[in-house]
Length: 226
Length: 244
Image (tube, rainbow over all chains, first blue to last red; front, side):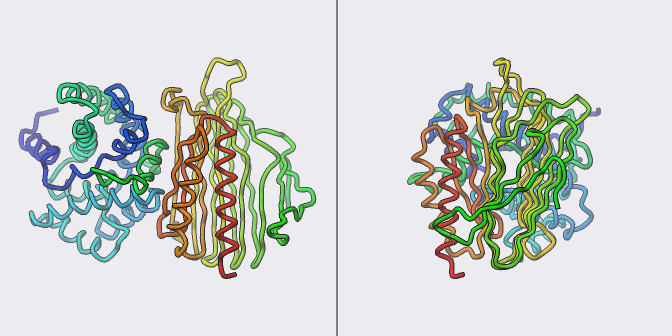
């Protein structure tokens, strides 16, 4: 495969944890698991990142993202977005996914991405729409990404978001964070090497993460939305 | 109508708190789910019916040959003004078992339902060998064809480490006629579930505010059953307080 410098640079830009789409507001369960005594060190962090990647992102988010990437128009994208809504049982997870997706879409509306602008109109009129993997597919189409680049950006921003949250929660230091990212990089590459079957339905099995996120409203003090 | 392996005998009125509720126990002659079983159940509750539906006990799911798996589909239709509790005992997944199951709930807007789906794992040889595959789908429809909720979990050759020492997992879905009492029920449930030793659980509002979904992870079946009992009581309380 030829090295496409422009696409690689665009990936670095969108995959940057400083990208102005509010990614810093989400810990995707890490904060809750730490509060419940289920996350205290790097080994446990690596296990949770692996859970998120292998048993949620690869089997659910990636499937939705691929469908939205190939959807013919905004109405077809909205149908996939509604499936994301119906397929996410926890209100806190749905809310987080929509907030993250809408923030990303909002950046690309300001950057005049044509599909982002068109799809944002639908999202504004339907509270169920705007889930993160669907928004990632939409903005990636505006950025002229390939599907492979889109999947890579989606998986990698999850990893950087989780590791960044772990650092801010004081679970790992900066050097250990790099070790966790390296381990996650290997797993993500393995997952991306396998193409999901065309008829794959979105599914997940992350009970501990689901529970930790849904227990959010019980907590008196929180740093993160999820 | 019923056919092998399912058996229906007489049903009972056993609930003192609601004498009109019918308790129905679906029994299975085979006593377990085997490798190539293809099972289907369909229940229709006519308007104004109040039913608690369960089975004879925890169902073992035995090994399947590598190229096959067992399937089970349960279709539940709950008509206007009805109330259903679907409370099958947990599955017991044996080594190399493979099962795909789907619960389809079509619930009228003014009806209520409680559906529980749970599993545990067991290796009779004591070697912690795992099952091969488990896919479990809960699909909820209410008066429109597009599902309001599709909760699909899937595990393929899971390593024991992902269960963190917990041995029983489940989900419960409390489908309510209106969303007005959801937040109060959610808060009460969370407090009650927190008191069960060996349980990690949370309740959350389901899509379209159609009810509450509860995720359960338990160190053993006893803790999981205790949680289901609390959820059942919460469901019955909300049914009793509803204006119908």
